[in-house]
Image (cartoon, rainbow, N blue to C red; front, side):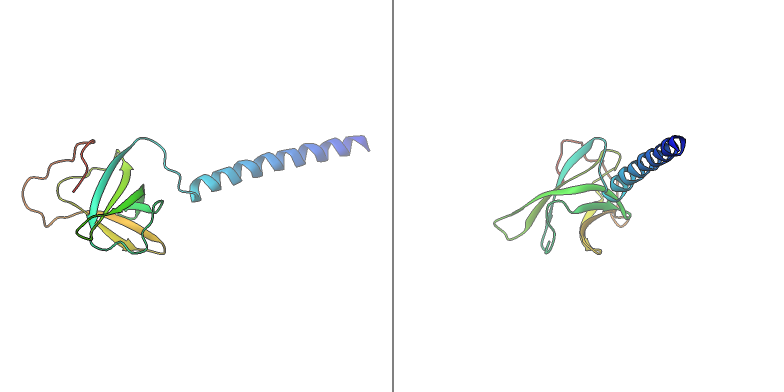
Length: 128
């Protein structure tokens, strides 16, 4: 009788440990936590309705950063500050757009219509 109680306790403990690990993994994946170093940028937009701090920044549909804040300029345009993974290359030909998915997000795309040599933004430079 005592042997079956221990076996049940061991099985239940193994189940609990596996479920805690699976739950932590799912929270990490679906929480879209950003790891690693980032670089801060800012961009000027005419319309950013429904965009708010904490919304995602995406390149080709992949989350690479987060909107950090917004401020209104005197000319009624909005400066949006955001960060992006350092692995993301932003050049002078890069264009940021506010696109609406299910939730608000900034989509960054590299424009192929920009002619000439494109320079990479230094990590300390904020995009205009």
